Image (cartoon, rainbow, N blue to C red; front, side, top):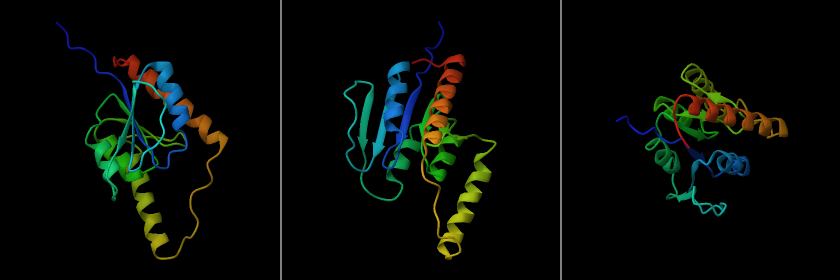
Length: 159
């Protein structure tokens, strides 16, 4: 008797996520479970597959909740690079809200760049932030999320 395939689960670092509505639509289309993790209550659709997780306030509490649960076959949506690195290390697929997929091959350089930019901002060398979120980012995100789900299904994960 073979082991039952693991289901694909989406984890959303939700506090400042601009693509929650898109995630809910994709999850509904693929019948996926979603954990919407934040440190304050966030409205979610009435759907038995979408779970609101409210964690205590504090640095990295939501990140820790997600990172402690993800594994291969899960998809994490986050703009938080250190969380992305932790989730990639755990084997999860990680996608930023702008559609950038973080992988084992790219996360090291991305994390190093993030840390450098953080140091430069702290020293007052850089005062700007990321570019504004655009419709193109939203479209890239939807494509990346769909691609990740299809790839996981082809690898034998279920919904």
